[in-house]
Length: 146
Image 1 (cartoon, one colour):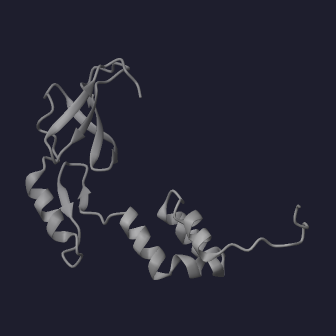
Image 2 (spheres, rainbow, N blue to C red; image 1 turned 60 degrees about the vertical axis):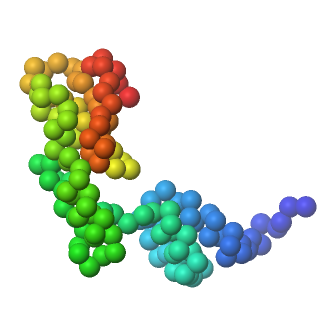
Image 3 (cartoon, helix red, strand yellow; image 1 turned 135 degrees about the vertical axis):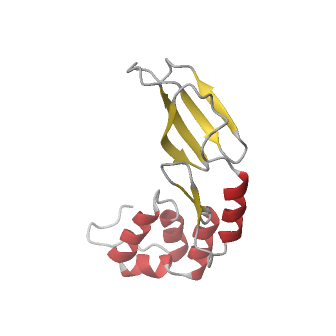
């Protein structure tokens, strides 16, 4: 039997947490937290925050546009791992062929999508997915788009 139109469906905190954990961006959680007292109660609970931190591991640092790697603030728990990564990885992508200037187009999960600008003005550029921590790349031919 259908519920009357004016009746509100009540969700348990567990079910609400299961929906909220699926939000694609952390900014969405901030918006949800600000929008409703029940959402805020669930999002700020220690159980939810533990689940969230398990899904979104802390950052180790960031790569600047010149190829340098900057570890996170030394006070953070992930700082020692960030310093190790900065010494071990090649964020300048020196393992790629030197036929042109490699430009980072995207970065996800520790890997970088780069294309090679040879200065010729051609429409299709060679693409590669690089993993600087393993000093490896997987190149695609110059006429492939993805």
